[in-house]
Image 1 (tube, rainbow, N blue to C red):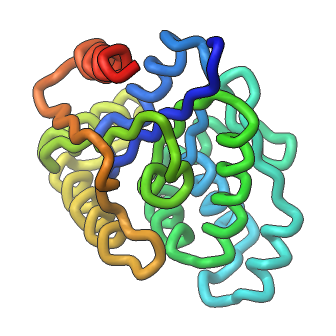
Image 2 (image 1 turned 60 degrees about the horizontal axis):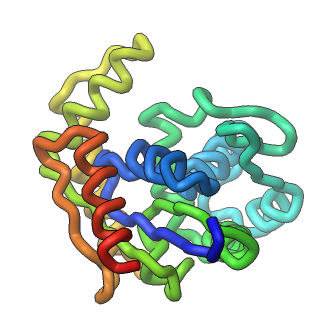
Length: 219
């Protein structure tokens, strides 16, 4: 693209942010940055190294020795591709808790801002438009009912061979919504200049097309 553009896509867990962001980035021909995967990577490493949430000394040491990058659609943690390893309910829960820790957010937000300053990106997460890319050219806030989001997540987990009830998946989503929206540090909320997109009942292509149409209209 001739000019640098940043697209911020926020929203709760299971709203389809990552899937839509990947497709929009592909259609625009720019990089997709999965910030949620970055927090999952931290949660994964904390569990692997048995680092308690309250042990700041061990956490700071771990963060200092942690490198996260994206390469050919893969998320790479300390030179290891961890795509599937971080897509479990346990990692999801730890990622949510870790994201509330100031040192974790400080480390990852700095990395995300650096990416946004250097090139055109589509970035999705919980606070991209309100905290990471506050001057993004385009901001969207994706929502969907908890029932719809639970069905999507349940299907995703079932397709991977994991056995979990739909009721438990929805309960986990509702709890995560509460955690994300009530945390003291950069809680989940829609930026004042963002456009809300309710994805309930919409296909991936329909949502992506709606976002692209809005961007074309604003350009």
